[in-house]
Every structure is written in C-alpha cells, then in structure tokens.
Length: 208
Image (cartoon, rainbow, N blue to C red; front, side, top):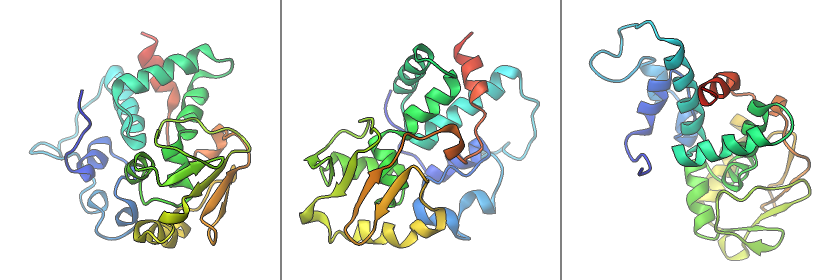
C-alpha cells in the first residue's frame, strides 16, 4: 500500500477533526476544516447513522493519519502494545509518541509530522550524538536530540521554531531553542496526549 499523497486537508474533513497535517496553516483562517467542517465529496453534508464498526474504523483511521502511519505499521504497533504489560490502548499511543519523527515535531523542529519524517530521512538530526535517518526509532528517557551543525541555518527549522508557541511543547520533552537541541526528560504518559482520541475503540476494532 502506497502512502497517501492527496490533499491533506481532505483527511481532516473526512475524520471530522483537525489532525494538524499542514503545520502553521492549521492555526490560521485558511484551515479547510474550519471553513468546511464536513466530509469532502458530493454527499459530505449528509449525516449518516454509523454502525459500531464504522465508528471504530474512523477512530483508527484518525489516529493512523494523524501520525502518518501505514496500516501494516499501525497494526504492528498494536500487536506490540497488546503484548506489553499495561493498558493496550495507552501502550499504543505511547509507542506512537515515542517515534523519532513525532519527537522532532513535538520539539518544534518541524511544522508537521510529515515534514519531520522527511527531515529525519535526510539525516538532519542526531540522537545521542549520532546521525539518524530512521523516523520510526523509539526514543527513551534521557535521550538527547539535536540538529546537525551544518543544518542549523535551515529556513525550515527556523520557521518551525517561530510557530511552536502556538501548540506548545509537552512536559516530557525539554527544548533548547538557542542551541537547537532537546532532551527526553521522561517517557510520555496518556495524560501528555491532549488530542481527543478514544483508543478503546481501536482496541475493540483489532480485537474482533
């Protein structure tokens, strides 16, 4: 299955929630979901009664699209979360939050998770002093993240740093904006994920 390359704003409208896929644009009046808060297409305005399965599927698709994960990857994360001790739904979201591309986005070194994923693949960032190119690497408490010396004047990173104040940085991360580096202070918890997600619906979907 190929990665989605269509209009990202259609995904927000389809899921009925702002997924913040367009970076700073999502905080402005240009946001397509703010202007047309209904599903795309000819029959988007028509309200349909959804089955239990449809509700579960839409919740899974919302989370998968927000983090930019393909279906096979997402299912693998669920299987790992199910095998780990604790609440499966919480484990799943924590695995997604610990991805390197998500950490870069959360620290404000990229405008969106998609942009963060591209920057990581280009080798712009380091993890504990070593260059990384794999967006799915799982960070741990105490890890140090930084921008490589030769990439610190990148206009993309400078622009991202200017708009981080709009969304804020979670408490489990620490950012040094002047030196373009950050630290993972602790492992994320369910309370650190403020986006409205009902992870229990995803667990019920995959448990059938």
